[in-house]
Image (tube, rainbow, N blue to C red):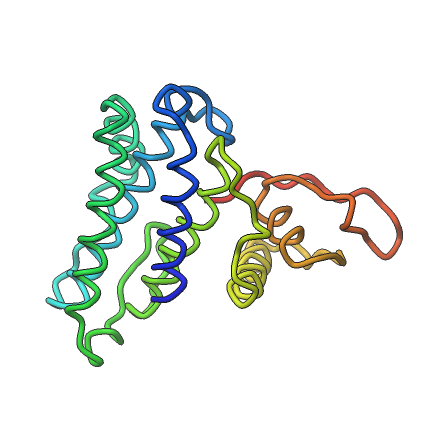
Length: 210
């Protein structure tokens, strides 16, 4: 929960540096405006709250009603005024935190299913949210950067991405460098001159993740 709480605060601090006009313009994610980004971050909290409800009640409440529902929610929210989107992000985070606070030790062990179809215990929900808020803070047209991430979170994020790549049959890349630069590159947010391979070959390009 600490990473989630700190990540949300960091996201808001980065968001506070961005004007409404800038939010209406491009984000650092291809094809998305800042309004799309805020809509996604808010709706992600709402979707994870559904998983918290699943864990509490035992009744399956998936993150999204259908495969296309996620995109539909994001596009719908992207049409809202920026002030509403700013408030939406905060409100949905509060709802998610409250939903998680209601879980007992037994409920935390309930298996739920992510939007990607993975079956995980409810204890994974705060981690899923932590990734969203920390990484997407760096997608805002502000000064957000991976160097601001907690060191232990960076280590966990790097391992998480490497595990995901392995499940996709992608060989673990041999790259050395600072953790923040590694995490930035692995999540498709750009390379760094501080990263290098043992052979000196250029780093492969990775698409944005999340």
